[in-house]
Image (cartoon, rainbow, N blue to C red; front, side, top):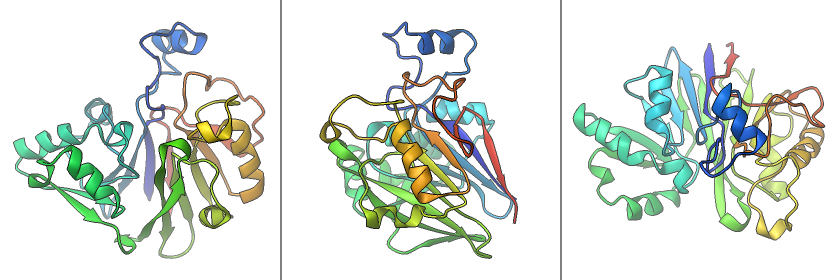
Length: 260
């Protein structure tokens, strides 16, 4: 059985925001159901160990919450700070434990990471995902998606060897082409980024879908289940808004079990 655990479900600033006293940020400071660290996902599998998607600046805190001291590998979606800001901390962890970390990245992402952290290759091996990656019973491939005014990102598709389950992790995308959307049709599970309930700004100025758009995509793609992540302080996870059955908000620590 493979277990997916949401370790970071927030957007690039997380929740609560340091400057904000809105209802969601205030609730996050008190009862904490809306408290969100930067986006990341933990995948645990008895055959292949622990795989982590993205290494944002909250990585160390997320590892402590998870009760983990090491990872077997990392997958990186793109080189924005909220997705790679924790790599120096992982580098230090590898250095002090005398390990070499393995980070699988889309090929065009590697030069961006290397230019920001030119010393990182001495302890973290950046491996280009030029072909699908096979981890135990899972075939994993990455595909490029539009990230709006922020350029591009990548999504990961996971297909079980038995073809019994297929799921997608796509935290940063908007205005995807029909070709980019093809893998999302009919997936058993789609994890999609949606930062606002209804973002009021022009499409060309935005970078991630909103909840209203995600509902439309759910009806178009018809996945078995959709979970929304990368949530800003505009979203209260205790509310349903206009979402139909089959869509839900990710919450910190939430798990999804995939049985073979």
